[in-house]
Length: 325
Image (cartoon, rainbow, N blue to C red; front, side, top):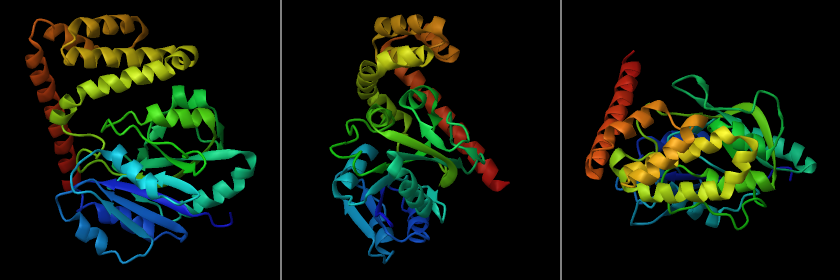
């Protein structure tokens, strides 16, 4: 346990131009006892050549010809071969600080005897120059499951002991979001320790992340998203109602909105109206459903897709402006 092996798993898809930053940030660590598992999710660009250009025996490269199968499938592929005592995940467009793995190892060695099995570190949103996640405060301490369930917003770097991930797999039937449906069960079962130290930098200005597909794909994935939300509410609904009812109604409102978009207008509206008194759905989504009520389902999908595309273009435009400045 003096120098635990750390496995870093990076799913990637058609990001050959961004991937080198992530790889370099790992192989240039001050802590050397790691393995970097890169899972190519069926990329059609020069990702294989980029990975092979790094001559480091600690890099493990996995690929499958037909893809993409989604980041969760790729994470599970990495988990299947990971040998580390500690395991964490990176996005292919982000980077670790130079002492990140040393901080992880030192902290785990220090708090493992106290029962800690999961570590949470802070992430920095580089473009906005602020923390990516909130809700845990700035004091190093153990955090409870109900606190993570109710208060955590945004992104943190989670590091798991091998023990916590035994038999665990991400729900690979979905390609964006909802990792919490799986991860929360880990926080509920194992002691978690938060270190308010930034050891991870995330980048967003270059466009949508691997876990955020284009509007067209988001529409296609609506049935899956509805299914996963139902599972999430079924699994954690009682805990949410007990510890933080407002957040419970947020999920109910989101589920109703997805159902409305997917053509189940009555089912969706019932959930939206039920969540309204509890602040469960944003006003713009409520107005969208009212305005679209007389419109056929295909028309609603078209309007929603157009609005999401416009929003994505607006974000990219802002990014270009910032880059020019």
